[in-house]
Length: 158
Image (cartoon, rainbow, N blue to C red):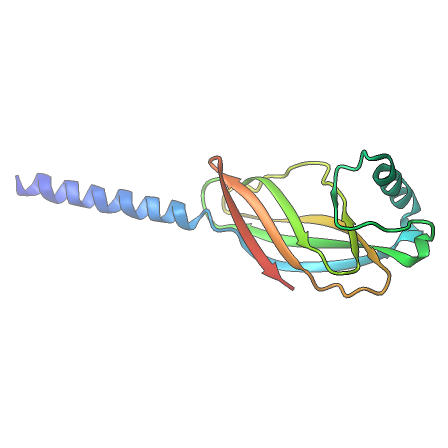
Protein backbone atom coordinates (compact mmCIF):
# COMPACT_ATOMS: atom_id res chain seq x y z
CA UNK A 1 0.00 0.00 0.00
CA UNK A 2 2.87 2.36 0.79
CA UNK A 3 4.44 1.72 -2.59
CA UNK A 4 1.21 2.61 -4.41
CA UNK A 5 0.89 5.82 -2.38
CA UNK A 6 4.47 6.80 -3.18
CA UNK A 7 3.94 6.11 -6.89
CA UNK A 8 0.71 8.15 -6.94
CA UNK A 9 2.40 11.06 -5.14
CA UNK A 10 5.31 10.92 -7.61
CA UNK A 11 2.91 10.89 -10.59
CA UNK A 12 0.96 13.82 -9.12
CA UNK A 13 4.17 15.81 -8.64
CA UNK A 14 5.31 15.06 -12.20
CA UNK A 15 1.95 16.09 -13.67
CA UNK A 16 2.00 19.27 -11.56
CA UNK A 17 5.52 20.09 -12.74
CA UNK A 18 4.50 19.49 -16.37
CA UNK A 19 1.43 21.73 -16.04
CA UNK A 20 3.57 24.41 -14.39
CA UNK A 21 6.01 24.24 -17.29
CA UNK A 22 3.13 24.51 -19.76
CA UNK A 23 1.87 27.63 -17.96
CA UNK A 24 5.38 29.11 -17.95
CA UNK A 25 5.55 28.39 -21.67
CA UNK A 26 2.55 30.61 -22.41
CA UNK A 27 4.56 33.72 -21.48
CA UNK A 28 6.11 35.09 -24.68
CA UNK A 29 9.52 36.68 -24.39
CA UNK A 30 10.14 39.76 -26.51
CA UNK A 31 13.88 39.86 -26.97
CA UNK A 32 14.34 43.02 -29.01
CA UNK A 33 12.64 45.56 -31.25
CA UNK A 34 14.49 47.16 -34.15
CA UNK A 35 13.14 50.31 -35.82
CA UNK A 36 13.75 51.10 -39.49
CA UNK A 37 12.66 54.41 -41.02
CA UNK A 38 11.84 54.67 -44.73
CA UNK A 39 10.77 58.02 -46.19
CA UNK A 40 7.38 57.81 -47.87
CA UNK A 41 8.97 59.19 -51.05
CA UNK A 42 11.00 55.97 -51.32
CA UNK A 43 7.89 53.78 -50.85
CA UNK A 44 5.49 55.89 -52.90
CA UNK A 45 3.48 52.89 -54.13
CA UNK A 46 2.69 51.71 -50.61
CA UNK A 47 2.01 55.29 -49.48
CA UNK A 48 -0.42 56.00 -52.34
CA UNK A 49 -2.23 52.68 -51.92
CA UNK A 50 -2.64 53.08 -48.15
CA UNK A 51 -3.75 56.72 -48.30
CA UNK A 52 -6.29 55.94 -51.04
CA UNK A 53 -7.72 53.16 -48.87
CA UNK A 54 -8.01 55.59 -45.96
CA UNK A 55 -9.77 58.17 -48.13
CA UNK A 56 -12.12 55.54 -49.65
CA UNK A 57 -12.97 54.04 -46.27
CA UNK A 58 -11.54 50.62 -47.19
CA UNK A 59 -8.44 50.81 -44.98
CA UNK A 60 -8.12 47.65 -42.88
CA UNK A 61 -5.27 48.77 -40.63
CA UNK A 62 -5.47 50.81 -37.44
CA UNK A 63 -6.10 54.50 -37.98
CA UNK A 64 -4.82 56.79 -35.23
CA UNK A 65 -5.73 60.27 -36.50
CA UNK A 66 -6.70 62.30 -39.53
CA UNK A 67 -3.99 63.76 -41.76
CA UNK A 68 -3.58 65.58 -45.06
CA UNK A 69 -1.67 63.30 -47.45
CA UNK A 70 -0.88 65.83 -50.22
CA UNK A 71 2.85 65.98 -49.40
CA UNK A 72 4.43 62.51 -49.13
CA UNK A 73 7.81 64.04 -48.21
CA UNK A 74 6.40 65.00 -44.79
CA UNK A 75 5.74 61.32 -43.89
CA UNK A 76 7.87 58.27 -43.19
CA UNK A 77 7.17 54.59 -42.71
CA UNK A 78 8.44 53.24 -39.39
CA UNK A 79 8.90 49.47 -39.52
CA UNK A 80 9.27 47.80 -36.14
CA UNK A 81 10.78 44.31 -36.26
CA UNK A 82 10.06 42.38 -33.08
CA UNK A 83 12.17 39.35 -32.15
CA UNK A 84 10.02 36.95 -30.11
CA UNK A 85 10.72 33.72 -28.31
CA UNK A 86 8.27 30.99 -27.37
CA UNK A 87 9.81 29.19 -24.37
CA UNK A 88 7.04 26.58 -24.13
CA UNK A 89 5.93 23.49 -25.97
CA UNK A 90 2.61 24.85 -27.26
CA UNK A 91 2.41 27.08 -30.35
CA UNK A 92 1.47 30.74 -30.07
CA UNK A 93 -1.13 31.53 -32.73
CA UNK A 94 -2.75 34.63 -34.22
CA UNK A 95 0.11 36.92 -33.24
CA UNK A 96 -0.81 40.59 -33.65
CA UNK A 97 1.59 43.43 -33.01
CA UNK A 98 0.08 46.77 -32.05
CA UNK A 99 1.86 50.01 -31.36
CA UNK A 100 0.88 52.55 -28.74
CA UNK A 101 0.83 55.59 -31.03
CA UNK A 102 3.02 58.63 -30.69
CA UNK A 103 1.54 62.08 -31.35
CA UNK A 104 3.08 62.00 -34.84
CA UNK A 105 1.69 58.58 -35.87
CA UNK A 106 -1.09 58.51 -38.47
CA UNK A 107 -1.93 54.83 -39.00
CA UNK A 108 -0.63 51.27 -38.72
CA UNK A 109 -0.74 49.09 -41.81
CA UNK A 110 -2.64 45.82 -41.55
CA UNK A 111 -0.61 42.64 -41.52
CA UNK A 112 -1.04 40.44 -44.57
CA UNK A 113 -1.10 37.33 -42.39
CA UNK A 114 -1.54 36.26 -38.79
CA UNK A 115 1.65 34.41 -37.95
CA UNK A 116 2.25 31.62 -35.48
CA UNK A 117 5.29 30.79 -33.42
CA UNK A 118 5.98 27.12 -32.81
CA UNK A 119 7.05 25.88 -29.41
CA UNK A 120 10.67 26.41 -28.34
CA UNK A 121 11.38 28.73 -31.28
CA UNK A 122 12.40 32.31 -32.02
CA UNK A 123 11.20 34.41 -34.91
CA UNK A 124 11.06 37.99 -36.17
CA UNK A 125 7.73 39.62 -37.00
CA UNK A 126 7.23 43.19 -38.12
CA UNK A 127 4.64 45.91 -38.36
CA UNK A 128 4.70 49.25 -40.16
CA UNK A 129 3.23 52.58 -39.16
CA UNK A 130 2.99 55.86 -41.05
CA UNK A 131 4.38 58.74 -39.03
CA UNK A 132 5.52 62.31 -39.59
CA UNK A 133 9.08 62.70 -40.84
CA UNK A 134 11.51 63.33 -38.00
CA UNK A 135 9.36 61.68 -35.30
CA UNK A 136 11.02 59.71 -32.53
CA UNK A 137 11.30 55.97 -33.20
CA UNK A 138 10.77 54.85 -29.59
CA UNK A 139 7.38 53.19 -29.08
CA UNK A 140 5.58 50.87 -26.69
CA UNK A 141 4.82 47.54 -28.38
CA UNK A 142 1.94 45.27 -27.41
CA UNK A 143 1.79 41.74 -28.77
CA UNK A 144 -1.50 39.86 -28.55
CA UNK A 145 -1.36 36.09 -29.13
CA UNK A 146 -3.34 32.96 -28.38
CA UNK A 147 -2.29 29.68 -26.79
CA UNK A 148 -4.90 26.90 -26.95
CA UNK A 149 -7.54 29.53 -27.76
CA UNK A 150 -6.80 31.70 -24.71
CA UNK A 151 -5.58 35.27 -25.27
CA UNK A 152 -2.31 36.51 -23.78
CA UNK A 153 -0.49 39.81 -24.12
CA UNK A 154 3.17 40.82 -23.91
CA UNK A 155 4.51 44.37 -23.79
CA UNK A 156 7.86 45.91 -24.63
CA UNK A 157 9.06 49.49 -24.11
CA UNK A 158 11.78 50.59 -26.49
